[in-house]
Image (cartoon, rainbow, N blue to C red; front, top):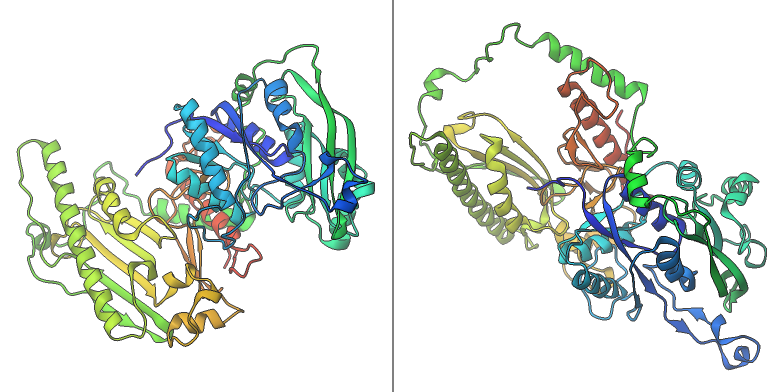
Length: 596
């Protein structure tokens, strides 16, 4: 269990485009300290010999990348060193996009490993670095790979643009809130955007004259270019470019030899135009702005407010009128003794590969050694809870083995999609969570709801109880390519791979700090989805996503007179709604609305 205590020193991953620059700006506004910037530069591929006679060597096209923006790379060093005045680290992209599935696993000579080595170099020079900011907005492919690298290097991923707002609002935020001036350096949106016509055009002018709105209406083009329709180079950002702005003096349009509708702007010569007066430090000025101008992904619909207000009013009417604590509804005969009976879990096997295992508890409540010191009592109780949890995992493993013997599938903890974890006291959570992570892992884990139910509220005075839902072969499904699976295997996996309309299982596991929804505190996913229809949503509490702190009535501009628990209830619903919205990504994953 961990949360972010406050400011972190971070390195900004910069492509030179609007998204990564604006993401850096938002990280500063949230109080983090920018130490340096890093960039992955493209490897050039030579044109054919006949074309070499007509083109300068500098006009060769970059190697294509699934992961990184390559257009405009020539100017990034000037952006960082001369405009921002910060240390700059660069590495050439040597790998290829060898692993193109959404689930990334470490593989040699993949371009993702270039990012790993680049950040390793940064860490050696700046061991104080704690986090990495990036401009991922909707690309799960990009975000999960950055998170994978950050996890290996024990860094926190900052992704403040992730699902930040609607398409047009996002563009307006970048241009107006960020004050960013950018030009188009790559287009791939024929017949809407054309190389000879639109490259080197100012993005703000294309928005203001209605060009982007018209293309969105006619062709469905994302106004902010999130569909790969265009890429940009930032020439000025007043809050970050304190010492100067870029001036492109000599450029040439280069079209892809295989598609004339795709082209890049090759920058032959550019310089930095010094600013007359040095503005205040970007770090200090942005910290002073606080979060007032940041557009968060929040839900404030009338329906949402009505639901929460109704629940709040109902709960208020049931609160005790005196200051005395509410009496437990558990009979005293049970409260005053520990029942040492053996409990067996309930196992229900359903059609289609689903299985529900409930009431997993330790066969016998573990003893603890009481002392007169209250703090020691708590330590002993937590250790006893850990022993019970370890016993539960052993029981679960035995059950999975027995289920495997009666099935054509090999059932493992990776097939578990949802966990209900019940604790007698929330103070046991931290120690249990470490063992929970060892058992379930951190890669595509199940969603989880963890609640404290009270001392001796669980059967027989136990401290831990667990329920789980699994689907046969769903773990292997997430980690298998269709071309790698043996079609002769008679299993749920084979049948699931043959179904191209509804994925057997999808996992939403965002590990980046953002304004979208809270990072999962522990080894679990925000949501698991079966067959594009059944959503298993993780438990939500009233955390502010960008700070990972509980919302409070004082500060943050909250409504006067509101109780903290009411604010937390509102925030919990907002977080749940954001996750549901995040599932609707156009990739076959079922989304939803709070009203559903």
